[in-house]
Image 1 (cartoon, rainbow, N blue to C red):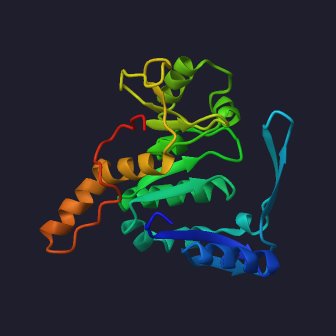
Image 2: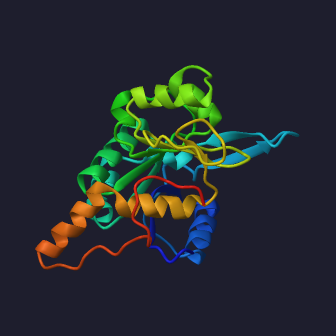
Length: 239
């Protein structure tokens, strides 16, 4: 919808949920050519419950998501090689997610990890994420405690996180470590950023690995990777 090329990889069952999912994604322009159909499990589903305060709880039946194999992600090298960013979540086995992130980084893509469903993660996984996007519950699960923003930033930094966005029902709270600025009156290093897509495109486009790949292609006489945004800055700024 933002003129970018989006590809989805994973597994679904041989059922009506999979048919509806492929049709919906296809209508939005998403390439599902790397979504594998398996007859050994149904398509994963999730039920989202909202309370009176607008907070959600999600009941997940993972189904075919748990059937994703190492061979599935090993085959994605060429896809990651052409990608500006690669987005991961935790609805597939953690070992598979970790391997996929390793391959994405090896191929030069900026890695974004949405750590949901919430679970504790080791430094070996967190250090593979260029960008972490937890909500408040997931951040507490990662750090093992509830902390104010400034202390949460430090705790995540010590765990190997470089850049993160804390998702909230009111707005997205972003932190670029070491920025020393606060847009919107928040603590130092925090600011509100409501244009998440634009911010991600700018960071993807300006990431060192992507710049290196672009230079390498020019040196080899190949076409440069197209910029995914017009601005080229590493840190997010208030829109």
